[in-house]
Image (cartoon, rainbow, N blue to C red; front, top):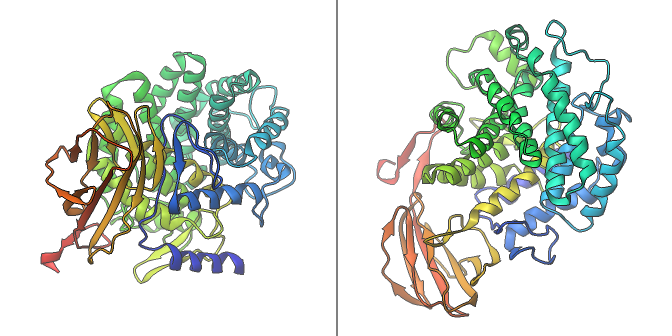
Length: 523
């Protein structure tokens, strides 16, 4: 435990207030190991490459605990005993999916071996884990929910692995697991079950509603549209935020966004947009641009029993959770990609810089920090949440990578300012933080062209809300730019070696704990 707390303290010294580099992707993802070959034009650079590698190394060669095959598969083999085995498939599924979508070093061979062993632990009815749990409405309780949570996370991981491997055996296993989950849906939808599970925290009803994500992924893999109907039927069962486990609630919203991507049902998008708006306007939205582990701790009018529920599940002091940061970040990016509204990208970026990056420990883990009015500190119990947050944090990197540079009809958009080497069909570039000596409250990035065809498209650079102004230099010479719809467009016949620099003057503001922001003139 001493090692955990020391690592957390060092993390604050190293990570707070850093603008760190990220990487891009175009379609598929890059390899996480430093110096690894790019995949379809992507290569991370700078601090994000170090962050990605830090967590990849933790998953592949880290210690205390070490992610050995026996350790990873303990939640489906049910031996050896380890923490949270009752959430069968939770750790193993996250591990599988995270490293499948963002491979690192020899992870591909490791995952093949893990999958071959995991398949042998599937029960006759398709589930993984405790065989004697009976899913009848009058018997369903927290242990049933724990199994559903783990099986749902495992189904997601299996399908993310299948997306990369196209291994038919994996799809067969996933389909059998999906049939089991569909088979218990009716009993779990009983209002009496929902009532019984109130106040059960991470073993509450969100363990059921989070299944939307896995059902949508299964539809994408099999083409079975009936899965979308089943997923849609779960939406009305999501309880109000109230006293809820943030990770489960936000995972459900992410699943609904994935469902909307398949159905185009405007009501589903409106449901998520409304829930998101209510969240960011509430005390549950923190000064870190994100959420705590549990909703409700800062809300007025909570009774003693409500606070007792949170204390029992999350501790007496408010703490964050890496999974919650990852979910809020991914949800904001989903909403931005689907709607084009920059307000969602701004929220996601704030979470990325102030919550998600801050949550990562020097060990590569993600986990918990106590967040109180005097300040922050590592959690007094187990700060590094190796059983969920480490994998779920790593799983968020692909979503970040997909959002930095996007190709659209009007040109190549630079939407997040993260370091990368990127190559598209007609243009290649290096995105870096500025190396210039800048004045206080100024921050910049540079784009250097590494490949340019005669018909290279224009580049559109986002001018964020946190910038009072943006100054552009092309090959060292100032150019005048207009801002339209949040972006400045630079169009020219690009040549290799061309350098576009952008210097932002940042807005100075003080953000209070309740989310209120005071501009510089009000300080």
